[in-house]
Every structure is written in C-alpha cells, then in structure tokens.
Length: 195
Image (cartoon, rainbow, N blue to C red):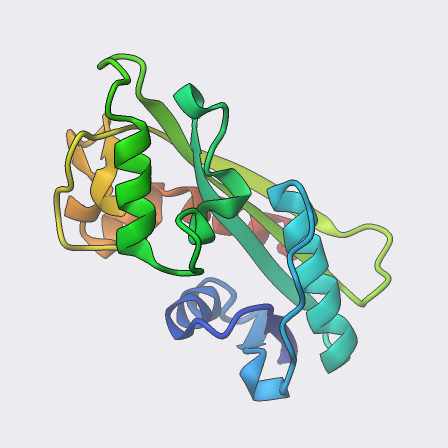
C-alpha cells in the first residue's frame, strides 16, 4: 500500500486519517519521517495547509496530506480564524483561547453569536504538485455564553450545534466526526482520492 505523510504529529488525527484512508494509503506522521515543522505564514486556511503539505512532502519524499482548521466568528469579523490555536498567545492553550473568545463575545446579543468551524484539507502528490487537491468544509453553529460538555478539544465546549441542541463537547466522538467540518472534509477528500 502506498504511503502518505500527514503534516501533523497529533496521534489522534493520524489514527483518524488512517481509518478514513484505509485501503488507499498508509498514513505516517511527521515524527515517523523526522520532518521538521514549518512556520504557518499564510493568511488563509488553504494557504497554511498548502505550506504544511509541501513542506512534509519535500522533507519525506512522499505524497502529503495536511489540514488547517479553526473557528470563525461573524461578530468578530472572522476572528480567531487561522489564529485559533494561538488566539490567546500560546499555541494550543485551549483554556486561554476559549476564555479570550468568551470575553470578546460577552456583549454580543443572542441571535448574533453565529460562528463556524472551518477545515481546509490539502493533498499533494509531490512537493511541486501544480494541481493539489483542496477540500474545504464548514460546520455552522453559535458561540455559547459558558462552557458545556467534556468531549472534544479546543473551542468544542463553547460551540453550540443547533442540529443537536447541545455543545460540540457534549457530542460523542462518533457523532461529532460524522457531522464536523473535519469529518465532512475527510469524506470529500476520500471521494477525490478514489477518482
């Protein structure tokens, strides 16, 4: 089976991609191939995903897959967007990032708290692939006034999912993966890769 590198060291994400791509590709991580991270200097989710995918492919010599995702809040003109993971200053500080968003949304009225999780997934066959596969999907919701639930990570405890009447962090992983931005993008990518 052909190997593909996922531009990530996140074990959960690697397992998720392995399951989705089973029978098509064997997914390896950046640490498996001693790939060094690259600064995300793009201004969009797609640009950052492309930067990461091309870097991983260049260092590993393998086809590469990358995703870049975050939360986009309408009342904040799209913040935190591509800066979701480092919104409060330190990369990956979920607690601080969530609190900063709640603080900035404090005076935003109910009905004007719309937001969406956004995911861009990029696949490149090689470093200079002129026709990368790019898939983007969103997941519509609203920003809650306080946290709810213990599942998920990041902004899940304050992201209200109207179709299910609860926070993303109150959904089971199986349900979340079937309706989330990343889940929908992975399904769309899988359809593209089978072509």
